[in-house]
Length: 250
Image (cartoon, rainbow, N blue to C red):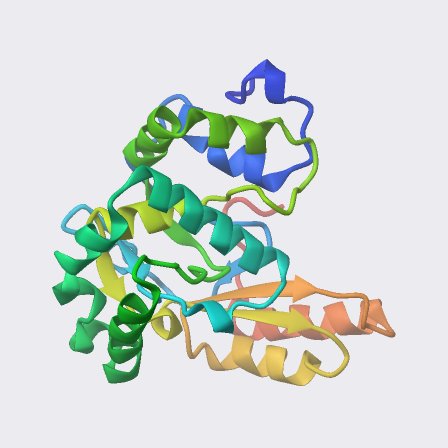
């Protein structure tokens, strides 16, 4: 099997290595959407849900430091922010785009106000996560980051397993926001990430059946006493809204 990932990075068991090298796929479109294997579409989507006027539709959520806990995701967010700070004049770029980061119609009043406060408090931008859902990307952004920060991208890609101080594909999202190559949207309109356990099983199945948001990401845990029953209930919820097999299923 031919892989676009450089041989120096293989073998790898690190999802960030795979994602940071997606731009190397031969024939990959300039505009593409990245889904992980735990993400599901719950209702029909259109190209405009991911790209408008050629730009990725992205959540615009500027984070305040005290809201970031000591989690892997948070450390990735901080690492991404550091790379942005060293690479771009982020504060100047964002102040030129206040119309996007404080777009009340697209983001809602609460998110728009929080973004303005965050920019004022931080002085520089600390991006929050972009959500664990399918996200639109520009291939040229990955290529640009590799040109500007090759040592950062190389270090993460050389790690065979996940590392705490690496970067991930959210960096490309943040880069697009900082450079204005995006259309803002409130993250609550894009999808929802849920954690599957005995306590949340009922609500997860309800989220699937209700289809309030177009996407759902289901993170599994070890807090499941009877995995077979749990997975059967989740499968039944999906069967209720998606009864027909796709052409890719056997």
